[in-house]
Image 1 (cartoon, helix red, strand yellow):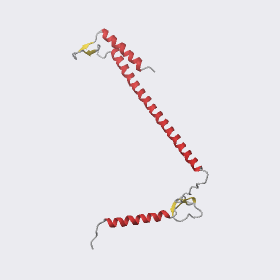
Image 2 (cartoon, helix red, strand yellow; image 1 turned 180 degrees about the vertical axis):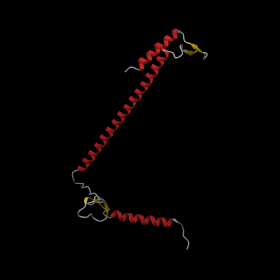
Image 3 (tube, helix red, strand yellow; image 1 turned 90 degrees about the vertical axis):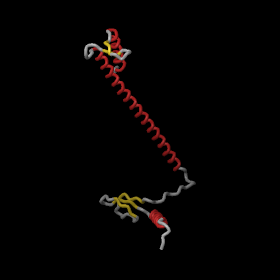
Image 4 (cartoon, rainbow, N blue to C red; image 1 turned 90 degrees about the horizontal axis):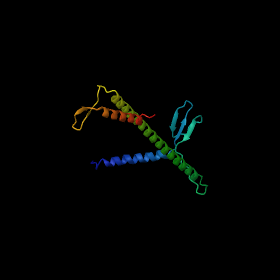
Length: 165
């Protein structure tokens, strides 16, 4: 006997699985906690001494079209709660972003302050006696007293600018 293809067996298995899941879904399922605290799931109703019993797949009651639309107010209430939640979430996100920005600015200011103080210290107390800088040809030349005083004034301005606190 010759088989046409492996697909026919797969189709049979899928069909049987679907039929079984439909039959299982139609059965009533229960959950309960027994006297020792064990949680049990079963298609059999819980014993009389069970705690925290719950039917898991009871159908939801059909909506009565003539009834007061209390469900609509609950839905509106839920929508309002969701909108409030979204609003609070955006406010928290904005506050967190602002706090991160302030922290980044404070870190940058601290770093700039340290650099300005280091520069002032070097200009005020040169490590090797006299400071040098590169001229337009790229050669190292000693700074004149006027240049040194100008650099000290600039360094002091930077310290005042970044280290104010």
